[in-house]
Image (cartoon, rainbow, N blue to C red):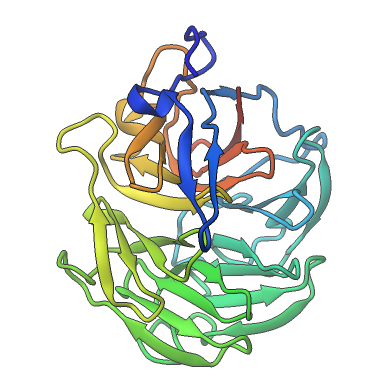
Length: 337
């Protein structure tokens, strides 16, 4: 691969500039081309006149390829809030045109946080002030909730500021919990508690704000964005520790890990934010299956988008990356070159 660096894109480095051999299920082997860089899509999205994006806490892509955003219209990270947000907190956006397709969730949430879509297009959400995890139909009908409203505890029926959700094909799901608790809890498809692991700390299997979740492409392993420990941790489906990733010590691309996402080819996308508005140490990393950095976007690199408050990531069908930022109240679309 290769090519000249343009002012609006970031090229891959080193060995990532050649085709990679990706090993899939069984004996399947195929050459997978790595995107040579990413370009910000200016002016995306285009919300209706009079509608403003609040702090964009969560972003996901549904089964139709539409971009779903969970935002905080008119509110910041105020876990003491008691008045429900009056405006719709869930936005469905056309991935190409950027226009609003649907919105819902008015008078429902306090402090929106995580969003994940299952294979039936249901929408799972976390609210760090309501202390709950929700399952909604795609058009906003509540199917069930887990947790006692506005009560934070650590047990099988409570959370304390839950952050994210990852959903298996059978409908069972994992919850990272969270800002106060320090665990990952698993539930069956009806929201019944199954098991959990983790405690406060920096050792293997310990957490300091487990903030994001995803699964390894092609198997059942779980990846946790262990935010305040500035690392990823990999576990088997039952919580047995396997490995961690901490980046390169003192590199510009090393810092608190807010989010992790995967794509169909097994690449990982990692949201780094060392400190709020620290643009030199905030951006998006792309890792290969060996967890080696093959692309870095942002981090004050000339011509790259400037990121201030990366909070969540999602990857579209065409390989576009959607970056949700809180403090700057926006979602940035990055299109692969």
